[in-house]
Length: 337
Image (cartoon, rainbow, N blue to C red; front, side):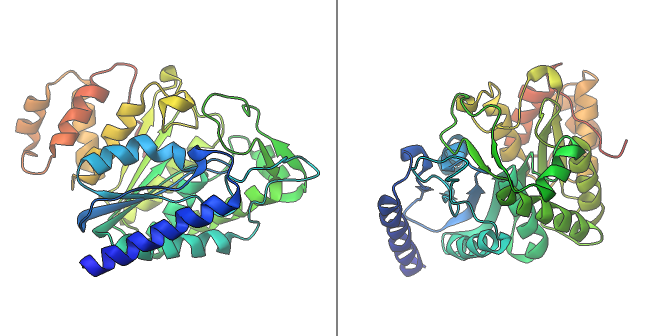
């Protein structure tokens, strides 16, 4: 196994060398690899969002690295390049979803050389890709962390425009803090993810996936919350060890939820929730029972005694209960209601 790790270290170094020749926008866009000098029980493979970069997963990546796991956050194809991008000269984002899928499968194989179990995670379109992998290769994935996955736009009219218009689009928050990625893109580059979202949703019907954690927010104005909930209903029916969690609108946690740099003051809650899921075997029914009891004011110890979950609940789940459900501004939304 040491030989495998050494070979992988050489591959990762080659990735950095290639990126040095690409002319990246800045260091924030460079692939991030947090690797211990040994094979770990779990290895995390994180996928950043559309037009963004690996910087989005640095905080959570560092948190899992500190827990003793290896972490890979590769720069996705066509992203992070320096250039005078505009309507006449759009950034070189792929318009063929197979480029992303092949990229993901390649990194899955790399991840398997660094850890016994692979945990895949992604934000937005990265979450869509992670969902695809969890459904297509569930036997190779231990857990999937979907942070507000892009399954449809908040407004159906926008989806219709994405499907038919060949125009260049600029983000409304292109100058927001922490935005180190592209400020605009051709809609056809996003269209492929909308198509993938449809395929993923259809695949979830009657297909057993790897256990999935879906983290959403009511304040997210970019994606369709009901589509996310519908997808979770399909997933949990076949994979009961999946969880769903939605931040309340009052917390103002928007689409870019992974870092304080991108205006999420509750970055630590996202990380703690992910830790709890990764280190627990609780089913959705059990998780929901605990959440309801917490919101009714019972203490964690009382709940554990009543529901007899002592042997199943990790230390991280306890921490998440204290930080999250003890706050009136946070709630767990039941997608079955």
